[in-house]
Image (cartoon, rainbow, N blue to C red; front, side):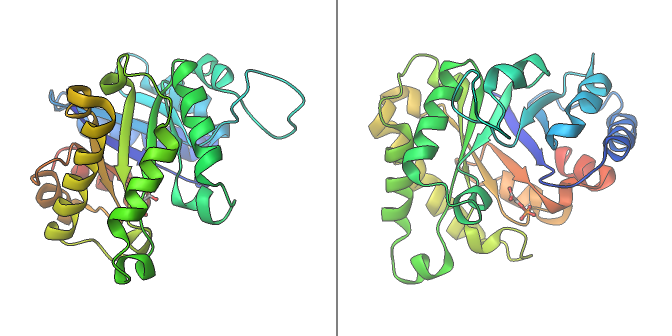
Amino acid sequence: MKDLMAANWKMFKTIEQAAEFMQEFIDLIGDKMPANRDILIIPPFTALDSVQGARSGTGIHMGAQNFYPQTEGAFTGEISPQMLQDAGCTFALTGHSERRHIFKEDDELIGQKTRFGLDSGLKIILCIGEKLEERRQGQLENILRKQLTTALQGISQDRIAQNLVIAYEPVWAIGTGEVAGPTEIAAAHLFVRTVLTELFAEQGEKIRILYGGSVKPGNCAEIMALDNVCGVLVGGASLNAQSFAQIVMA
Ligand code: PGA
């Protein structure tokens, strides 16, 4: 399976800025599109159409930052996996720490979204990660195990390695400039791998595990070289076409 290099733009970029980014990024990548890496852009909803138009024929994938676990209905302000697929999305995030902490999404809702998204045919990137005080209290493994098992309860093994991606993002490293060290990343990824194989047997060996949290052009190669790191989920440093192009090619 290819590594996955994902750009989470969060609540940044107008339609025009998204189009400008895509043009510059595609020009920079040119024919150097890495054969062993998938590239994924996760724009805000309003820029999906712009990214969809620009990515056509490039092999770049597009994903959504959020969705509601229903096909349609009276859910003012929400958007369904089917609508996102209609707009060209093949991936979506669940469990991002900003959804957990700002919007109070709990493990149960994240599990519902993960199951519904997968059943709808989206590839889901389930984000997990501990807060600094939890790490300090020695709770890292408990937190990661709970987030994984609650969100993945009842999920069938069918094509799970193709359709599910886990992103390990220590909350204290997101948007802070603080990167987890190689030893911390490798240990957390090994633990996630262990839980995935408990849950999904040999399928769990193949599920991609991404690292996220202050990934930049300067630290990406070192992170990608670690065992059980199968890609990165990038926020801040993905907003600039040059910096994301450097990350993708690192
Ligand atoms: P960051 O964000 O790269 O800005 O730390 C990562 C994320 O939130 O996925």
